[in-house]
Image (cartoon, rainbow, N blue to C red):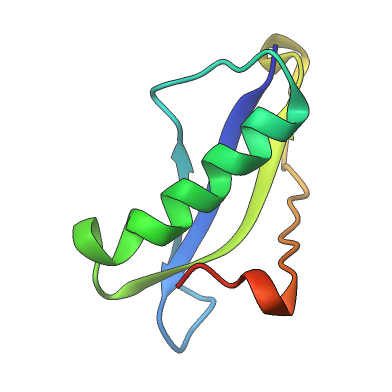
Length: 82
């Protein structure tokens, strides 16, 4: 099972950031988790208009998570959602 985390920051800065945790998960596959991260990024302007999604992380076992989380954001240029 995978949990989705998305890093969002105020547009134009990386100093003011928050980590959003998905409330709909967990997901059975990593691909479902990644798809959910892109959904969150696409919907973000409706809920937090001054923020942009920068990175995501799909965590397999949240209970073993300690300290800072390195997160990634991959987007194909031809599939930009927002």
